[in-house]
Amino acid sequence: MVSHMNSLYLDYQSTTPVLEEVQESMIPFLSEIFGNPSSKEHLYGDEASEARDTFQLECAKLLGISPSELFFTSGATESSNLALFGLLSENSQTNKRIILLSPFEHACVQAPLQELERRGKVELKYLPHTHGKHETEEILSLISKDTYAVVLMAVNNELGTIHTDSKLYEELHKREVLLISDYSQAPGKIPLRADSSDNLPADIAFFSAHKMYGPKGVGALYISEKLLSSLKPLFYGGGQQEGIRPGTIPLHLVAGFTTALSLSSKNINSWTSHVQSLQNLFLDTLKEKNISFTLNGPLLKTRIPHNLNIRFHGIPSDVLIAQLPMLAFSTGSACSSSATSRSHVLQSLKLSEEEIDESLRIGLSHLISETDLKQSLALICETVIPMQSELAIAHNVCCF
Ligand SMILES: Cc1ncc(COP(=O)(O)O)c(C=O)c1O
Image (cartoon, rainbow, N blue to C red; front, side):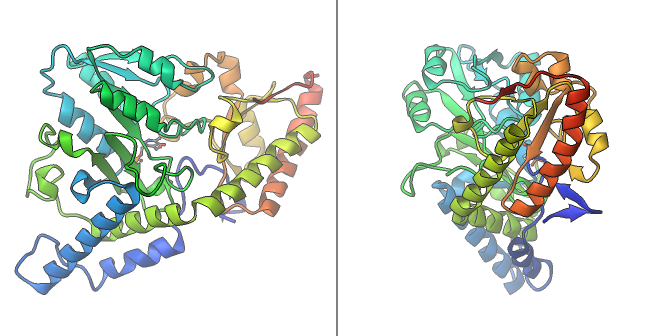
């Protein structure tokens, strides 16, 4: 159980704790292996440079890409800004300006694209969807000769919707349209590629260690070989990482990133099946107790089981959060929760303001035991049942 002052953590899409194995893998790089990988004149530098190459190779292997296509960054936000501004800020392909994107993309992808549109470099068009799910055929039907890229995150951080389809990638490839995919929420939850001989099905992908039980402040950008020559750096400096992302590599963080990615891939089946049983327990209990709720988002089978975006009818989520200080869950994306605006994801689902204000995000993890979840459920039921009966809410469950 991950708890702080007796509060059970249920916000694993916001961030995750650093697993012990990950921490251990980082320690040598904080002490004995402290050399600068760019110092070529001595053994300290050689040792660090060797370690960097090993980490890069291991991550590339896990993703089915070439090491030269992988750059370590400070996180998914930097990765997306590097790729989008790096490719598009000098976009001179006047006819290939259209970007088809999901309205559910994270702010770290939408904001740079909106800035590029403001500068006249691209034209954004939003993809249609059903309850947050985009269909491959529909996306393909919108491609024109002016389409530069489709931007579609692998796993949505608020709804859990999965969008990884090798057919989409192959069809876009044939049409010379790029697929740009935010993979921050994917490792350890969905297989990153169809099988070990396949590539990651995207031309550009963003990763973040702190979403996969690794440390904060490190992530990665995958960018297909064919795009490297057109990619301009965001920063200029000492030429590290081929000058694409200069600056001394923080080897302890890169070690943590690599171990986190490796553990996510090794344990995906056991972690996911545990989380699936937690999701079943959660939904079955609410139904048994006649709680009236809606699960926001698409069909359960089209999403990861780790994410429950749920609306308890009649109860504003801030009231529920205030009543349940022993549970740590959120009303939406941590990255936008300081903004006064409502979740753009729930707005894009066309929920009313009242419905959005009643919605909560519960993030499940393999670190939560069944006993802990049962205790949390008991607290939720004890709070919600009397509130809904006082409001005379008609019993109604909406869960696809
Ligand atoms: C889907 C998604 N993309 C990107 C990010 C940003 O990641 P980072 O904190 O590594 O910049 C987040 C974090 O909330 C996320 O959930």
